[in-house]
Length: 91
Image (cartoon, rainbow, N blue to C red):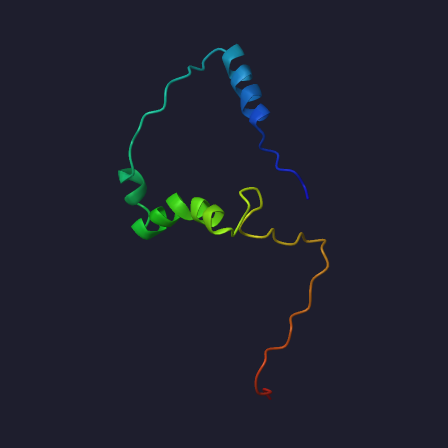
């Protein structure tokens, strides 16, 4: 597995570089609530995203480390042949 390039140390280095440069100012985040999100996304999707990870861990669908969605094969991976559909033959 290829490790993700996003690591906690990366944000520390970015913050350090910005602090050493002129023209950047750090500010506390502003809470906007869910209204801006709900203005552009379906409420059902927002509800799902708020709870899907906790639900998956609670039900054992993941151990809290493994992803819920398997990685897509890379362009260089061998392609698995599709199994024929069960049922009557089609002409």
